[in-house]
Amino acid sequence: MIARTILKQVELSLKTKPVTLITGARQVGKSTLVQGFMEKGFSYVSLDNIRERETARKDPEMFLSLHPWPLIIDEVQKAPELFDALEAIVNAEKMKNPDNYGMYILTGSQMYRLMNHVSESMAGRVSIIHMAPLSRNEILGREEPVFSFDPKIANCRAKANPLSAKQLFENIVTGFYPELYRNPLLKREKFYSDYVSTYIERDVSDMVHIKDKFAFLNFMELLASITGEELVYDKLSKVVGVDMKTIKSWISILLAGDIIYLLPPYNELSIAKRIVKRPKIYFSDTGLAAYLAKMNSPEALSSSMLSGRFVETYIVNEIRKSYLNNGLEPNFYYYRDNNQNEIDLVIVENGIVHRVECKSGVRFSSSDIKGFKQLDGSSYKLGEGAIVCNTDVVYPVEKGVFALPIAGI
Image (cartoon, rainbow, N blue to C red; front, side, top):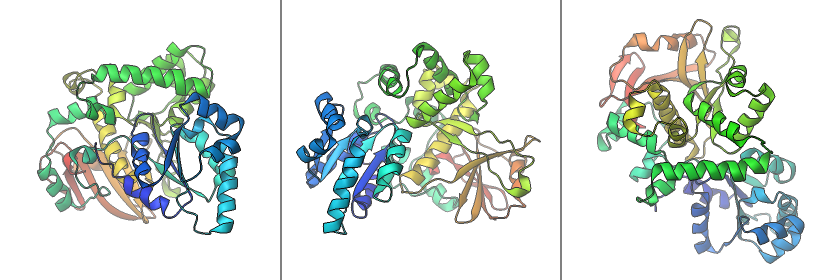
């Protein structure tokens, strides 16, 4: 079994909060992760079990009396009625023991629905941990620090575990769901076909009645082909043939299931008038996006017009995972203005602004980072910059900016 970096964050949460909620997309490994705590005295119950689910919905107090803490409740979003009952038990225990940590571990794959119930009844008592698909670091079994701009660190990591262009596109097309690495006999196309069918039939149907599921699938396929691009609602509406209200609703569904996430535009008062204000859309897993975009082989993807978008998605995802897996909320943005100046990724950290370009090539110069200068007048301190690309070795691009290997993330 592949060791998950985020396990340390879960263990820390159990020592500091009564309730730990682990969110993330279907099949990212939440259940496998939490079942490991059964060896530490936790009982386990899944609300995929229809009888358990019905009891939890109809009589949450009875359900929790039948399953006393310390308890793992898997797929908790299927019985939102539990949250008030959980709050009552946590509050009662706190009256007896102020250090009532590690009472419950909850998992769920519909993030925004869960957040509503947490904010209503469990605020201050819950530690929320976002679990992403596997990272390359986890697959390699190596340490996963937060992404570093230090050229020496990047060079050392890249040399220890190099990544050729061919391997990069193989990783992108395969994706990062644990089951694909746990079972070598599992065919990628079969896995993703089943994944999409199950997601639409269970998760999507649970959240909203979609009369035309085929149209929703077409919508997902269209989005996959624009991963790494700006999200333009009216354009999507025209192509899919539904109104903008429906498009926005469908985007919310995909966000709730952690199928996609949005990167907001970077904004400061000094640049507010000239920036593009639309977010960029990224698929949380490149393998799912490649399947939906009908890029069924590394060769097909690498030679297609989508290759740059998918490499960018891969890089941003891996950097994002390094933050999430270390318990940090990524303050990630992108920059684009009316003069077509661009920065793929702007990272704001401790009052410092870092700038990143994501490229699929090898050799770059200062002309490739012209957009970086647009933030020279930032009210924040400017930190290091990087072009993360297919280079085998680190090299300077200009002062304070290095080309870093993708393998060094």
